[in-house]
Length: 111
Image (cartoon, rainbow, N blue to C red):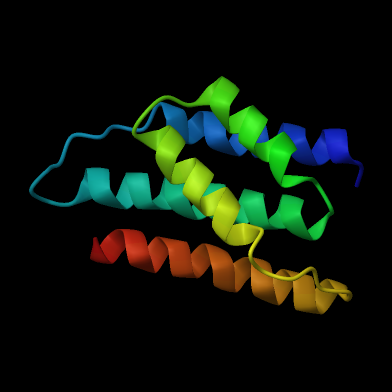
């Protein structure tokens, strides 16, 4: 997959989160929706990381597509992703992508 395709996928993922409802509901629907968005962003970010997309490209994309408070969160996810290594096999990459996204989701739900 080429870099432009990966960035396009990343932009599609983050655009769905940009319109997420930030109002808290007693039944937790908004939290679940927002945390699902966090999961999608984390997954897309780590997929891009594992495909070799530069951190600066993702940060620039986030700055064009997000506003506070989402922008700060997305930048944090991007920076966290780039503190992790690149893996060489598809299985290793997929396992780590899933672990990274699941960790972000769990952290969000606990917050």
